[in-house]
Amino acid sequence: MHLPDEARTGLSRRSFVKLMGASSAAAGITATLAACGTTDNVETPAATGGETSTGETSAAAGGDSPIEAGISYELGTNGYDPMTTTSALTLAANWHTMEGLTEIHPATREVYAALGADMPQQVDDTTWEVTLRDGAVFTNGEAVTTDDVVFSFERVLDEANQSLYAAFLPFIESVEAADDTTVRFNLNYPFSLVAERLSVVKIVPMAAVQADQQAFDLMPIGTGAYTMTDNGAGSQTVVFERNDDYTGPYPALAPSMTWQILPDASTRTNALTSDTVQAIDSVPVADLTTLAEVDGKSVAAEQGFGLVFMMFNCGSAPMDDVRNRQAMMYALDYEQICSVGMSDLATPATCFVQQEHPAYQEASTVYSPQNLERAQELLAETGLTSVRVLASDHDFFAAARPMIVESLESAGLTVEYEERQSSDVYGTIDGNPDAYDIVVAPGDPSVFGDDADLLLRWWYAGETWTDSRMHWAGSESHAQVQELLDQASGAEGEEQMDLWHQIFDVISENVPLYPIFHRRTPTAWNSETLQNFQPLAVTGLSFVGVSSTR
Image (cartoon, rainbow, N blue to C red; front, top):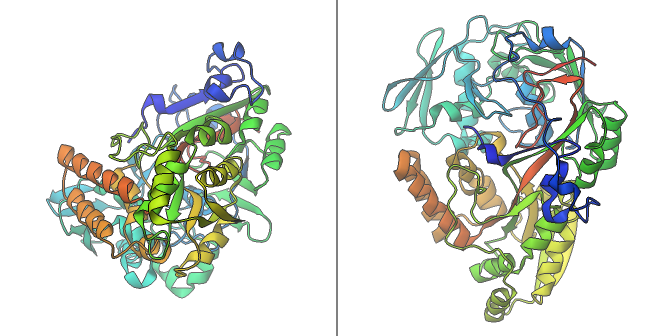
């Protein structure tokens, strides 16, 4: 599904200031400048595949040079296996090396047939079929079979494998090979989002995974346009080569890609300005203003679902009392956090999804703007005087974190605060019911899809988040959300939308985990050497359909 036009913000060095709004003074941009300019430096992407508006391939129009990029996120601890990986870097890598039967384009968010020859075909209310693309082979040379597809889905659905993606697929009863080229999906109930949801499972070679799953995790084998030749574990550089045997709709338009892992913000910016790399993600706001003034460089901030949340330990005192959870949300100074801490690249949450989302409806409980009086009333009722806050150290909201702490302190709380790397945060709290009171961290399941059912299920269904992390499973509100999710899965149209809105209301009132804000995702790139590059509203970088004249 498309993000609405008003959700997209493209910037040139003359129009960048329009984005900055109330933070222009802090960024060193005057109000006079904020009134002028257009978006003439922003690339207009091709509509589909590797074609330009003239119908030529991007490679023919734009050359055949390697692509160089700088990635802000570090390697996760769970490798590249698409059954288990959830880190931003590995997911972005898998966009280029792996395929599902369908895929969702990282930039346009359009659903298209990938490893499937066509979009899934509905046989009856609870039966769908997909025919495999002719000539599809894995990068190890083995032909893709329907057995590989069945294996790929069954390993995700197997509870013993504890795949987070299983929560996205409750509608699937079984998967079977109808014949040598067709896979059949038998559903538990009619489901309106089959095409979108099949994209979350990447098809892997059964023989290779069964022979050595650990080796596959380190160096995945897929059917994508690129094959990985260096996983970055030792070199801090992820390297890809073009897959010349690729037969799908988005062939590689560069002979190779090199992604430097650059978690330091200033290092990423310097790499782009010195032309060491051609694109960087997670651009700090101060650097956006600088880059917007550099000839040949373009910047953009795309509105999406991506958020920073507060997650509460609902299973232990003091956060087992919903009044304390609500007090934390009421205490936040949303204006300062979003306008100053995030330099207007964030909007206070008034619903679980952002205002531009097709399913948006203001929730029954809204915590913005700051309501210290209400926070203090609730704290007076519960007697809470101190909290433990554990935050991830992602650099894009570094300025906002102390403001969150200050907000809680302004409500009269003593805050025991700690910052850790993201993997350390979850390593600390997973399965440890007494490890924290509040976690503050970013999240963006929209990398898997945009529909409300998927976004809700990422956090509020399955055991990893609800049981092992927020310890919310088993509560009355948890049971209510599961029932509403199941009802919405089998519904369509206005009925489905109404059920999602009911879930938004339950979540807003009970806040086991809730967004503080939704943010625009800032990207910068070399518009002279990258052809058809599109900034993303989701976390990461994509070079699908992109060529280079470097």
